[in-house]
Amino acid sequence: MVSVPRLVIAAPASGSGKTTVTAGLMAAFAERGLDVSPHKVGPDYIDPGYHALAISSAASSAASSGGRSRAGGARPGRNLDAYLCGPERIAPLFLHGAAGCDLALVEGVMGLFDGAAGQGELASTAHVAKLLRAPVVLVVDASSQSRSVAALVHGFASWDPEVRVAGVILNKVGSDRHEAMLHEALEGCGVPVFGALRRTRAVRAPSRHLGLVPVAERHAEAVDSVTALAARVREGCDLDGLLALARSAPPLSERAWDPEEEAHRAIRTAPAAGGRAGRAARPVVAVAGGAAFTFSYAEHTELLTAAGARVVPFDPLRDERLPEGTGGLVIGGGFPEVYAPELSANEPLRAAVAGLSASGAPIAAECAGLLYLARSLDGEPMCGVLAAEARMSERLTLGYREAVAVSDTSLAAAGTRVHGHEFHRTTIVPGAGPEPAWGLVHPERRTEGFAQGDVHASYLHVHWASIPGAAARFVDRCVPPAG
Image 1: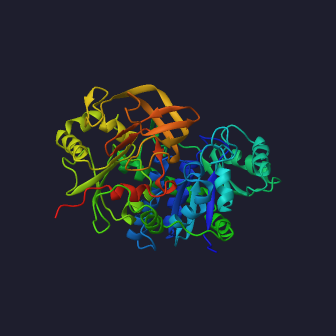
Image 2: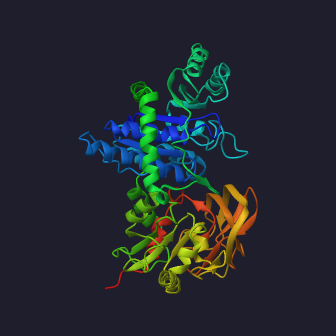
Image 3: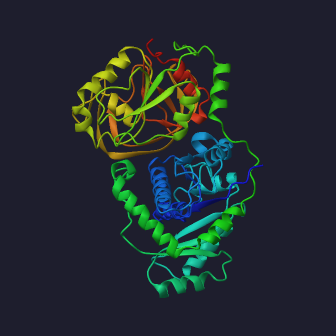
């Protein structure tokens, strides 16, 4: 049994202010010297970046002013997605990420009860809260209501008796009088108010075609924003009361997910994955990062490392060569469409990526990585690994997908079933190669992506923790370091 103080920060609907309130709470508690573990319900990559920044910047500020900081703010933001990873992995993944923390804060997704389309509560914030047996604090946009807030909160608190809606934070409050009216309305509701935050435009993060602009693209401004958010939360929220509520969460009986165990199990059960590296080798796996490639799950790097790789990050916007000794390449999601001219101008790196592919080294590319491997993106030359052209589109493609691996690739054997997520405003022609990466089976049927040699390139985002052996399979196929 493991006791982890924890809260789920939810809302009745998107746009209520979950991300700003959650980031402010994380920063405020980190300023107090608490080791805060950040989590996000759903597949989103951007919010966890703000979470990690809020904690690291607040912890650094506290340390520089002589305060106590146990962890130095080094924890990455982690996702908890019951569709991508399966409900059975949510508590183990949470316990892995939250190990040793003083407080874990989990930001919800959409409205509290909104989950995977047509699949009931699956992957909703309420579903994850139940799996974690965590108290829920509801962030309510109070900007256009007074007494009606009581009906809203009562409805959410009583809808599912297994979800413990244990508190409210009132957001976008207009004035002292407005706040008094809201408190009066909620007095008989049975759900305590833990804070009231006034309307402000000073801490809003800019957005574009796929949501918030990632932290990596506006680091200095984002630091200022989370500092301001921490101040708002300190002034407007009962931090002691929230911490006491978090500590009331019952112990969890599940075992923490362990990347070492996962990797060793995969190596034992599939020792002949078609690889070249051999178990004694420690191949270099280059992982794209920087402003153009910001989408990744922390567990992917942990699994690669546990499987025997030496993971080395690089920035395709700045670095003209791959890391020394690269034997495999991972290019995750991001915004190459925003940086197409700069990526194209880095001709030495584009040539190096094409050369690595020609050498037979494995390449795993999803979404942004797929575009980077194409011949061109919006007319700008890319790496030319794939005989395909990519461009921006007016249409947003968004949603969960169920898929089956069509071909044997560096990530999965043919027939492997996965749950993934698509999120892009680009198209690529053709949409699938002669040997597709995936056959989508739900909610629509089509082939998608490219399985070309040891290149696996697709729009589909998948979480490797849900694909036993994916990281070990990839590392096993890497080119071993020279010498």
